[in-house]
Image (cartoon, rainbow, N blue to C red; front, side):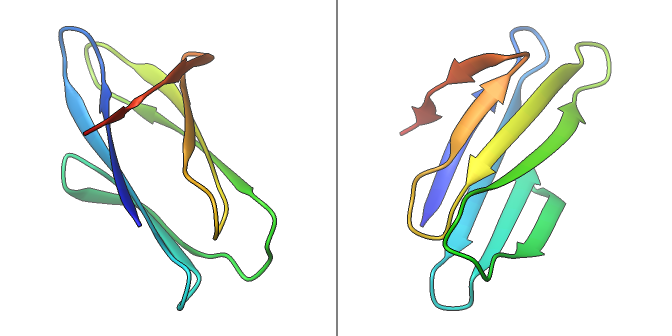
Length: 83
């Protein structure tokens, strides 16, 4: 499953969260650059935190499990995925 999120107001970034239930890998990219590539062997959600942006920096938190959609917080506020 692949989901896209838009981060930032003036400095825009596209974050992609991809989960593979067969290989159990989670991949997170920002603007096409790999940020996270991690194995998720357990059925429980895993949390990742990182900063996005240079002139407009945002604290991003992604919670994702192998069977659920990603839940994303930017600066502590939830954001919706981009269709």
